[in-house]
Length: 343
Ligand code: 2U9
Image (cartoon, rainbow, N blue to C red; front, side, top):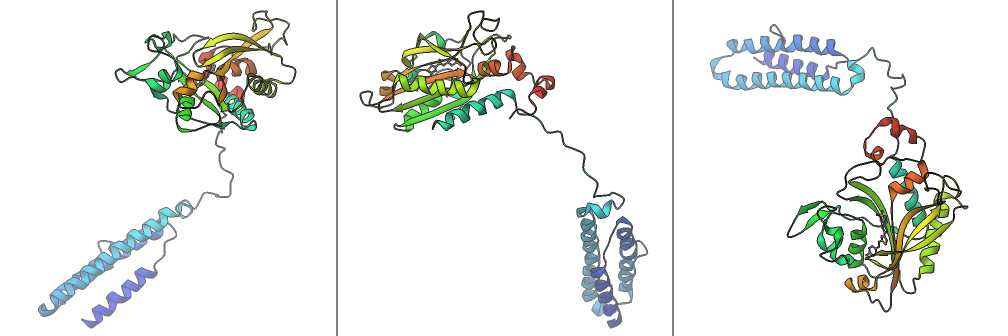
């Protein structure tokens, strides 16, 4: 019996040092040790020669030997699959790989990033907020009272009524959330997607992208607003672009204005883009309404602020001459590929 024990120990050592370089080696191991006429079977057959008083002891030894052989087989198999180079010896691993097609940034992302980097240089931080909003942050806090037409079901996608939850109709709700938490000085831009219940056409869509800005501090004036927007326009469209302000109305600002730039296509001479006026409207702006500051417990006797808002699609249209809003969300690669190489 001692000879059998020695034999088992020597097989164990052989299996432990067994190495496989390919599937054939592994199969040779299986046949030699685990095959129907293999070593494990033969060793197990020795059980009949074990005297009855030692059967229990040898039963355990032989069983452990069988398990050892099976586990060693699994380990060798795993070592093969983990080094695929050994599984596929015919592959030349030094060959260059197939190129992975690299996509291109979406034109709206290109323009949004460019806009953000201009404002960042002026010290504006980027703020973000939820696309699902409550009534307070989207409307009430922003001086849009309950019967205001902007709240209409026709214009707003309501997710729930009473309490009202909706898809934000502008990114002004982000400014509201910042004013709630932060004391002046506040100097932020809020880029993001907004939703309005519009019939989809070349000129309107049920979602679009805005970039709004807010600056609240002591002594902020309309001159600061003009200079900030002037810098933005020059960086975005070049030094020759002129601007003009027209009086307007927004519930969040007083006084309010709309800003036009000289047409980037015809240089102000008149073309179809500017409808032969030489000017194109690009944004709305104004001085933050004192009521708004009070809504957020910011002392409107001490602090003033300016705000502005613009559509990223509009800026993109002027930069890249995209004349159909639907192109931005159709994912047509013939459109998207045209922006390869743009930053
Ligand atoms: C707070 C205070 C002031 C945000 C402003 C505009 C003017 C504006 C629209 C123009 C075209 C966006 O893309 S558009 O629809 N925006 O004209 N937005 S002032 O003023 C704020 C916002 C929040 C707390």
